Each structure stands twice: as structure tokens, then as C-alpha cells.
Image (cartoon, rainbow, N blue to C red; front, top):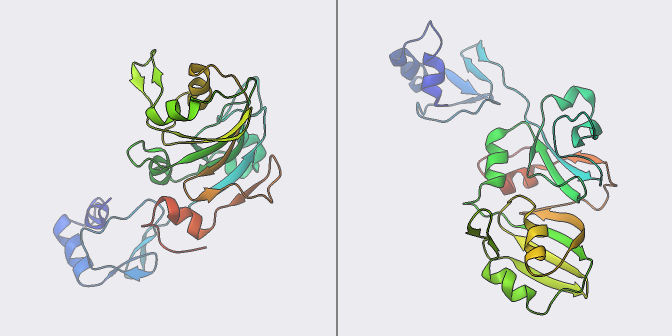
Length: 238
């Protein structure tokens, strides 16, 4: 929200007064005086007018989880455990998932309370690469890399996937990079070329790589550099 609008939403300040307060240097955001009336302030920022706390900031949370097989990428489920069960109870209500994994898939999962950040992470137009280690039941055919690069047609949706990179690691093993996040996309792409995926492990999303020190089920906060790799405009911290 724009800073002048945030202030003028308070009943005691008109829009004109809000602009004057900002221009006079009486408004600070996260302890820094801002004089730009059109500056955009996110919901995590604290805002003060002189010594008056107008809005207390909400702490932003960013985690990577090594998702184990058998856990749902969901906030709750009556049958299966969910990835949020792997976090402290006090955190669970605040986190949502940026880029889901199937219950039988494992690897890098990112969770946050920052909706703008997670939207950028999964926005198809931005085309953040997602890298998977895949094992198949049958040998991968020689023409599969070219078919992946050309895009695989999904008849049900009537669309063709964006070009993907398939790097062979063995007869039944590959590393796959996609730039979308369609439903069961990697498994369906292999099915379209005559293969069946038996294991799927996400290694990377953009510049964020699954920490090799994390055992399945373990998590850690993201570093400042990892957070900014998705949204460079986030203030440098951590």
C-alpha cells in the first residue's frame, strides 16, 4: 500500500495532511525516515509519525524444508500428515506453501507468511527454474530430451508446456528443469513419452538449493541472500 494512503486511512489524518507529514520528514518506516509520498509499504513494515506508532510491523518468515515422502503439501488434512506438522505449533497458523510437492515426492519446499514473495516464486511469467532428480521405472528413451525441449502437449488442458531441460544421468535416471508448476507436471511429461516416474526429488527453485545438511523433515530459515534471490527489493537483512 502507498505510504500516503496508509496514513490517510486513519480517521485523524486527511490525505493532504498525510502528504504534508511525509514531506516534512515526520514519518518513518522501519526506523527510516521516508519523504516519498508514493513509497509502497508492505504489511511487514512498522510505521511511525514522530513518536506515535501508527502500525506495528509483522515479522516476515521464510523457511526451507526438506520435505519427506508421505507428507501432504497442505495446511491440514484428516487422513495424512502435512508439512506444517513438521513445524512448531506457534508457526503453523502463519505459514503457507510456495510451490507444492506431491505426497510421494520429496525435496525442497519453501514456506512463508509473505504472500507477495510466494506469488513471485510461483508466477509463471517470471519463469523461475525448478530442478528435480527423477527416477523412472523404464529406461528413458533417446528422444525424450528433444521432446521435453519442444514442450509436451497436455490434451486435458489443451496446452503445451514450456520448453524443459532433461539431462540424462543413467538409463532410468535424469535431472529435469521446468519453468512452470502445473499439476503433476514432471510425472505427466514422462508419461507422455512412455515413462513412469517412481521417485521425484526437488533439488532447487531458482537460486535456492536444498541445504544438504537438512535431513528429511528438517527445516531452517532462509538467508537474506536466498530471500532476495526471489524478490530483490526486499530490504537486506539476515
